[in-house]
Image (cartoon, rainbow, N blue to C red):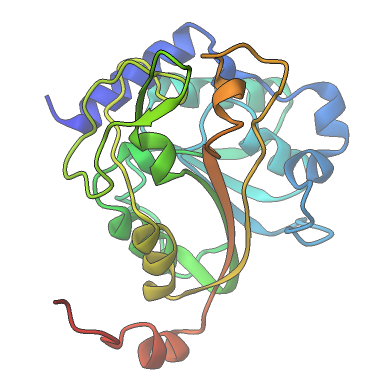
Length: 267
């Protein structure tokens, strides 16, 4: 079975089980959708009439908030069960949301230069080739479009277990190839999913090489000094699990002259 099918099944199951990733947008959040979506001030003051792609973000939360804010929303996800939550919630709230079931690295059904904003929660760890994802996003994004994304940090995915002194061990190689093997520490791994480690040169360098300029980078804090050893927030004291990126789509002519040059020769 391909990793696509495995991940589709894993997320279908998470949707059925109503995991923490399937929390629907509340009435309170929908009353102030941009405040809910954007605590960092990365979005414009208004998204009314903006075309927004919620990428790999099914689950009835992000797409609903953008639609409540007046955006023209398309939500893409691999899992039909996750997308069903978007469909049900959009119907319940009388919102117009376009729903597309596909993998994040195949947006061939979407037109070029279509979106003003692409917003992607943690999900790139579920595909093997991050560059293909970035290339697809670059193609469907208009010049000046904002791309907001969150990713699992590579060091976090290297952690395999805790030792006898409750120290977190980097048991997987940084230059890991192929799918990540099962590990004892499952704090930031989803049950049944196949995941891949993407290094910083992929996460940030690949973004720049596909026609984006990085405008901001944040590391969400997941540390809690009252959490017991083994709890995911205890682990968050030692390794930041996520990184958030804000990037902007360069004009095509700028991309041609700057981002596609070979600036170094591999050893």
